Amino acid sequence: MGWLRFFRCCRRRPRMPRVWRSAAATVRSPAQAQQAARCDEGRRRTAGGGPVESAPPNYYDHSSRAEDLASLDHDPQRWREDFQRAGDGKKNPDMFVIRKMRKVIWLQTEKWISNNLRQLPPVITYIWPEEVVEQDILEHAQELARSHRVAVLNMASAAQPGGGFREGAGAQEENLHRRSDLVRFLDTRWYPLPEDKCLVSKDVTVFRGSEKEGYPFLEEKFYVDFLTCAAVRYPHVHVDHCGCRYKYPDDEESMRKKARAILGAATAAHCDAVVLSAFGCGAFGNPPEEVARVFQEELRTACLKKVSFCIFNDHNSGRRHNPRGNFIPFKEAFARRERSMDL
Image (cartoon, rainbow, N blue to C red; front, side, top):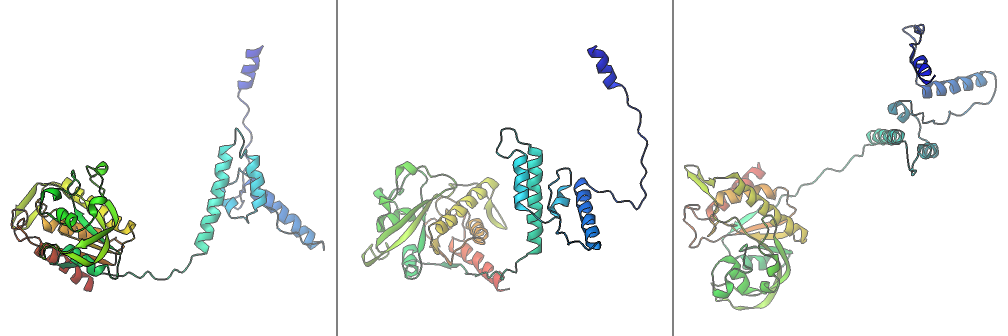
């Protein structure tokens, strides 16, 4: 008996006669048909002298297109009732209906945004040209500290905090340690330094002068933030008639990440001035033309009022990676940038 009922149910039903519509006939969704019927009823009452009916309330008929529903006036209370009826907050909600109702809300929001565009004031871009100077990095930082909050780049060893400052090494990192209390801020737990990170040491006290002056104790100490970052060591370079370039893109990308971290850290530390140098262009062997270009490109999005490069040519200049030293390539690179901004 059960199978008989099954076959009867599966028997093909006779085809229903077609209902032909004229070309002028309008196909309406159930929601539109219901709203049109109410409007017709209101017009009939108005023609008979009865009171004028208000517009029919919204009805979120889920069989209608979301675009059609979004074109109606929004009724928050009715929407919420239908939303709860769809199972909002219940164990087994009708997610098809819920998503469709949320889509209606977005379409209304999108329409409101397009109809209420705000006239924003013009964006004013302040251009602060970078400078490349032959000056001691901490002396320059002292001058800027009178009117800026200054961050100073510490071109560091990736493995040893302070490098060889205890043994009298003469690189920039060791020089900074001999003239400040930076040693108090660097912790061995942060080493080796990550490739794309730098350490921020805030309010480091600088209380001694330059080596050229014999490291005098300053009459007026000053405070700066130090950005400790290690450059790429001994990258492979390609030298031809166009100059010296990175041989492998990975080395350039690594230096770009470091430059981005340095500038981002200065901004995060609320510094409006940063004092940099020829990062990694000395004993580590990075080509100065390439490093200058990387900083140029990353500085386009930096929020800094003052950017200075303090560069000296020393015993690490005139090598295969920097035959013209470090000062001239940086000076030329940022002079070209300044001329392009003037145009």
